[in-house]
Amino acid sequence: MGKLTYGPVFIPKGFDRVMNDLTEEEMEVTHRQKAWKELLEKFKDVIV
Image (cartoon, rainbow, N blue to C red; front, side):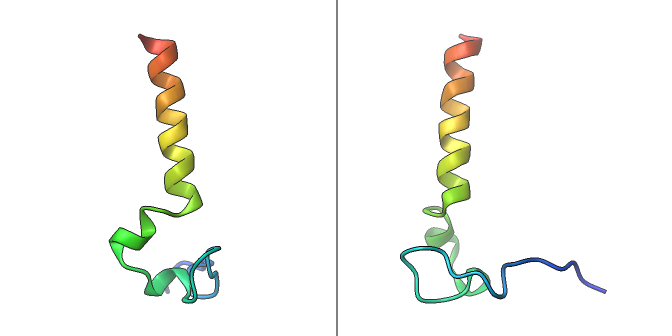
């Protein structure tokens, strides 16, 4: 049995398709990817 996720029903802001139907390139602009990039930048400032 597969995991229950929101990918099959969630349509990210700015898109007209569900998350599962997006390409890898389109996924790079999702809120999660943006959040990870911001978080990594903050860690770089703290670690360096």
